[in-house]
Amino acid sequence: MATLFPNDIAEDICRRQKRAETDRATLDSTCDEIARRCLPGYSGSFLGASQNRTKYDKKTEDMVDATAALALPRFAAAMESMLTPRSQRWHRLVPNDKSLMRNRLVRMWFEDVADILFQYRYAPKANYASQQHEVYMGLGAFGTGAMFVDALRDRQDRGVRYRAIHLGEIYFLENHQGIIDTAFRKFPLTARQAVQQFDGLPKEITDAAGKADTSEAEHWFIHAVTPRGEARGYDPERVDAKGMTYAADYVSVTGKQMVRLKGQTDESGYHKFPYPISRYVIAPGEVYGRSPAMLALPSIMTLNEQKKTVLKHGHRAIAPPLFAPDDGVIDGLSLRPDAINYGGVDSSGRMMVHTLPVGNLALAKEMMEAERAVINDAFLISLFQILVDTPQMTATEVLERAREKGALLSPTMGRQQSEALGPMIERELDVLSAQGLLPEMPQILLEAQREVGFQVIYESPLSKSERAGEASGLMRLVDWTRESVALTGDPSPLDWIDWDMAMPDLADIGGVRSKWLRDADSVAKIREGRAQQAQQQQMLEAAPAMAGAMKAMGPQARA
Image (cartoon, rainbow, N blue to C red; front, side, top):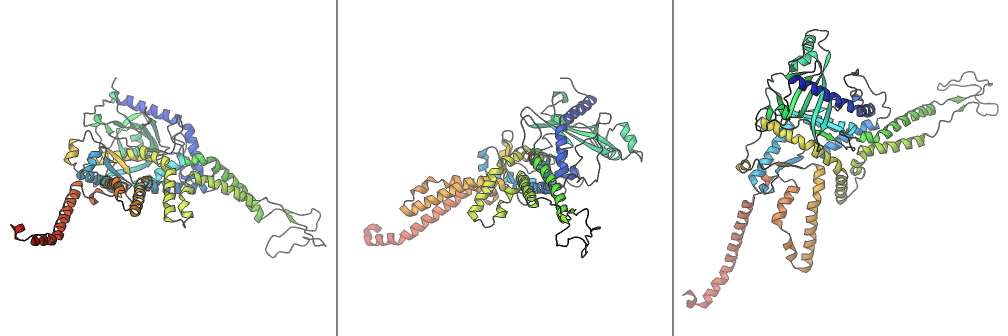
């Protein structure tokens, strides 16, 4: 395959990005419609460079009812609490080779790596927690959330930096296995900002940056992350950018020209994909996700129209239109407090003025509540209110409800773990490793490094509720066995339980840290010491009887 030159690469990136943007036009229109009713601050952000985007406008004209807008942040908070709670460790790392898990040094090394991950992930400059919340907001509203994970570019500090990427800015493609491996992020910069960030800019932009009336004019750029193929000189044995799995390019749409970050002298790239993408649910033949807001959009729009109607009728109920005879003596009704309207009744006391019926407001409110229930169900609000609405449950009922909630959420959460959190952790490890921030590997891992990978064990509340069934099954078996032993006096049923195999697994299910557990050698030494103590105790207890027996046997026994 022929080698591509910079101009060819820039034109190819602009062409592919434009095609991806055109293919997504229908989705962008739907997302903008959702934004106007659920996330008004994002309204107009899917219109692209060809439209005038109004900044700082209130953007709430289409949002009559705020049910969906209030449900969305609750959905994001629920996702965070069940998947990535910032108040606890929600995952750990273990080697793929289970035999290595028996080595205490290996277990402790993986725990140290996980500790470092959490340390840098939740560092103040990392900005992870707030950006992850934004990703969950985008997931609930638009069905797709994107995060950019990069090295912290700070002269005084190292680590990882996170940035939530709005769906209106990013376009991505899947490979033949359905894995996202290509991303085009299109973003605007003023001419002044572009000069601060890039070298090699087109003359049009550098000239604009030097003039007061054009320095704040926006220009569009594309950050393209694509698999590095033969045309880009990929060689996995190399240690420079040519050996990286993904090529990273910045392109100025103005002039379709490659540009470089300040201080960058050569090609750039990534070993791991830097844009972890989360999708809520995917329809057949589609690449982008579909969201709870899309599912509930008919109810959201219906509720908006219902509220408009109720507001009108409510206004009429409070200040109703009046019926009055056209030949009466009433001359201008006064609706002021304590006003007296002469001629309002006839000589028989019958009302001459009547109010216009305004309809059944109670039925209208009931219909609105039905739509609100559908919206809350779509955003999982009803599911998370189970425990709140029934505080009188017993502890057993609470555990059962928690397991039910975990079972209902498992498919949704599982996609987030496999598509977004797993790739994010791989990227984090790549960044920290490149900065030399990971601890030195034990010798056993160094010897098996090429053959041994790692896997992520999630320990979020959801994952714990799913795995709790394994431990509870053993505990129920122990309870039944204990009752059998108590009834029959026969301890042989306990022989079926292999505690040496069960205890490490129970510790693993419970998330007990390896440094809190003894290794197999230490346990063997403790048991050996206990056996020796028991043997000595038996000898001490038997000593008086033996002495008495020897004394009874007389001199012949002593001889």
